[in-house]
Image 1 (cartoon, rainbow, N blue to C red):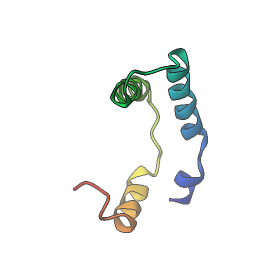
Image 2: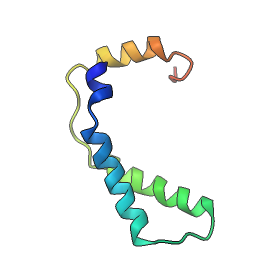
Image 3: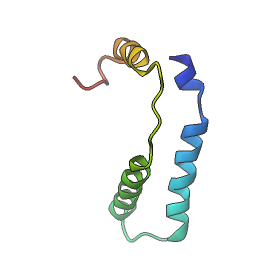
Length: 73
């Protein structure tokens, strides 16, 4: 699980892509419009993801133990 938490390159790339979307339009009429744009951008970004971690099932099991109240059934 530590490798997943300390691997920030993917997180930084995701954040950079979200910043790129919001930088194009500097002003939003409402908070809802900003959230909608970020949600749609997130959906587009995640469609392009193809890689999977080799040990994801082990990491998922550990996270289910540590964060049982946050993990969906």
